[in-house]
Length: 350
Image (cartoon, helix red, strand yellow):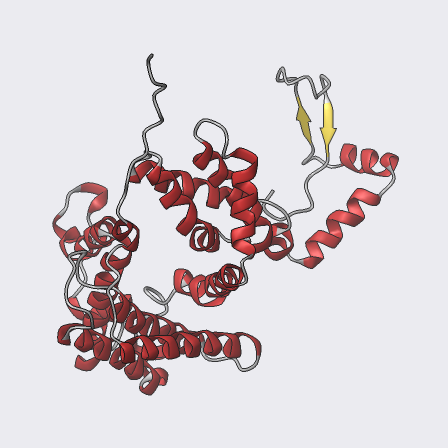
């Protein structure tokens, strides 16, 4: 008798899912927890009660987050003795010092960034940029650091490049004082991180602790876990379901990825494939309802509802009178007539 072949299950060590997170000693764990709670409360206070100057708020966000990162993440994935080594404490102090310098010199920095700088401005800008690059390497790998390094190098060597790549050249002080300002590192990306992503990540953490995230993952496994490639299908469903309550790709990855990625790895998916499936499902999950309320705003949603409630005759006549109307031609989908007139969308970026 020939035995039925059992499906192969890949035994993946749990260390793989921890990245380069280090093991902390007791007092370091307590310190990290206190800093994380204070970090969250600080953002909630500033965003809801007392506003700060945008540059100051974003600088504190980066400096405080960098200090947390250097405590939590080690230099490499190589296991070492528990605790934060002395050189990472230096990075923690340097990160806090850069944020403190911006706090003290805020008024002057708002006027002289990239134009009339001091020696200390250049030193803080250079050290702060290196700290952000190192923190990015520890948390996201070398890819982003290499891309940022190439563009940073271009600001110095672009004056010797040919054709359209050539520029007039910039000095060392001009580059790093401009880079470490609200026109560079504390620009739109940091604004989104400090104003929106931090809230979604906190919400995702709350859902995980309250077991709502586990319920969504269990429901996805029950629906699709039996099928071939079940963990990947469950990952896609989990991202879509979780997106309805989080509205953020980052929050989706934090909440569901810690479960779905190890689950896919243990049944044989390689790391790039598992990460790609989770990233794609989490990104698509942020498009599920009711995300449009948070992105488009209540006024636009009310306008869309009022537009949908108009009589059909009024909508048709309005569409015909507007030159911006679009004629939809048959594409073979079977849902459109030869010429259907569609009025312009009430949403600003549709």
